[in-house]
Length: 62
Length: 467
Image (cartoon, rainbow over all chains, first blue to last red; front, side, top):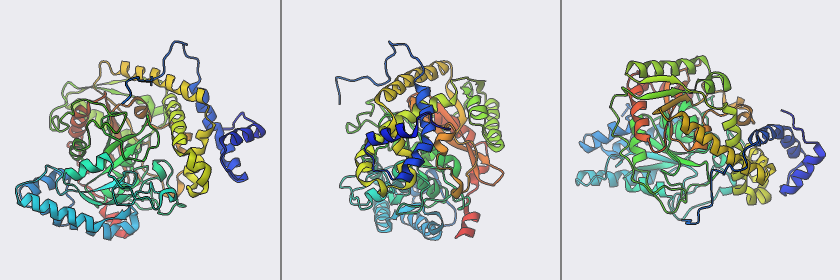
């Protein structure tokens, strides 16, 4: 599954992580990123604004 | 001792003083010597500790002070469980020389129950990476055919139990890491309800998806092991403070009247299972109906929805755990782990939050679907084990995981063997119950297990050939 992100934009994404990737490692991750991107798109389907997350802050933290 | 006993069988014989824990342990050590060069189930063997534990158990039994059904039972711990004074590596160069000073909670509990520690068992790197050939220890191999994969990440436990090198062991399950190797190695394994078993002292992968649980040859053995693991622990913030059920109470009881829903689209279309896997599940459903259970089909959201949601959460949380080492020791990780985990660094906070919100809707969907049901049935793995050299690097992302939905929901889920595929390797099914309904899960799983004859078959012919 090919990513919609350009290689230059992906370079920026890699730089933001701070990971010490070689050129080959960047290429490997770029080729695989499309699968992650598809999953991210899937979880971003519209949800009602009032929908609460599964995990709420618990003031009585143990 | 040629016969490999189950925990329940060995326990009864030990209690009757017809079997010595020392003799039982020696038989397991002999099998380790005979088979582990081919299987690599162990990262570290602890034979001196095992014999010391066994002699102590024997002394208790002879003094009439046995600790219970696990006293004198040989076990192993997945090498992400901290063991005081014994190396705990996560199967990674990153922790190659790590020696914890404290036992994890489950390790401590099993030791108090009298178990005999045989050693530390292989895992996929940090419970996610394998099968890796570029880490300090080789990956575990499938006892039914050592050229084949065990699945993972509790790979060593799956192999060691199937080969009778231990009678039970610990696993962890973040996306299917107990249920996968249980299915491919032909044993049973349960991912308990989230919060039932403490993860304190277990190397974390994903805080909200990690579960600790047991793996063993039979359903009853898993119940006995879980009994000694479960319970509130203030050291795990997810631990649930409630009384622990008796997990063996329903074993042997009928499933008559039990309501079972089958999530057919998960394993018939969403991640289509092999003919042998389908045949095994359909046979199990026939058995349940014959025993008086009511079986009906259930439709949930596509498996890919659960998989995507689980993967975004897991990847984000795992990246957060490993980021400091990824930045400083990237190349000390094996290729599979570091590349898979690095993708988590590209997930934005807002995507993670959206996944948490989506998780809630999927949890509500499963809760609603099970309102009038006791159990769900699905597959654990789509087919029998592939060759270990042919496991795709991105396989966990290419097809939706059959086990992930119940890490996402936290519901208890168990693998039970159903038979063998065309290649002679095991296949299994997955049973799922509502939260904290493990006794019902064991009851149904045991009812099916005792109806089939395959549980007498061990992988020894293939192993003897490999050894």
